[in-house]
Every structure is written in structure tokens, then in C-alpha cells.
Image 1: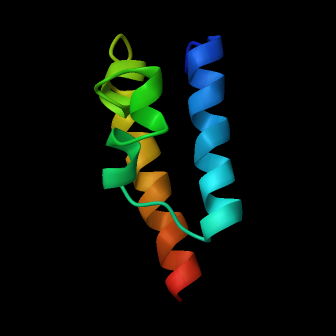
Image 2: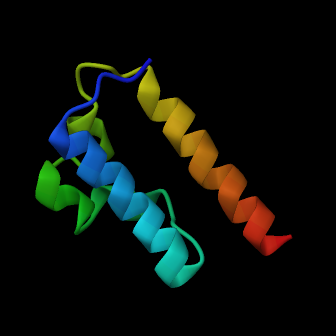
Length: 70
């Protein structure tokens, strides 16, 4: 289970906004603005104390992009 804080909530909201606004989100974008604004290391920094969450989120990003492409 993900430990939730305001930074993580904002990070996930930004992920959702990217999908709704752009129709996709790349893995690279999770290391760029606005995601790197929350932590200079992007997703790795935001979830640094729960690194097991990162592969799960990246997998979700890839799967959502496949659905959009398909």
C-alpha cells in the first residue's frame, strides 16, 4: 500500500491531468516538469521511501498508453 502525503497526491493528480489533457503520459515526463517540481528526481524522489511502488506506477503508465494506442 502506498503511504500518502500531499506531494504524492499532487503527483498522482498531475499524472491524471496529463492523461486527460494530452491523452498520454510518457515515462520520461515523470522526471520532467511539473513532476520534477515536486522533487528534482521526479517519480524516484517522490516515492524514494517506497521504491516498490515505482515499477507499479510505471507499468500503469505503459498499460494506459497501450490502451490509448490500441
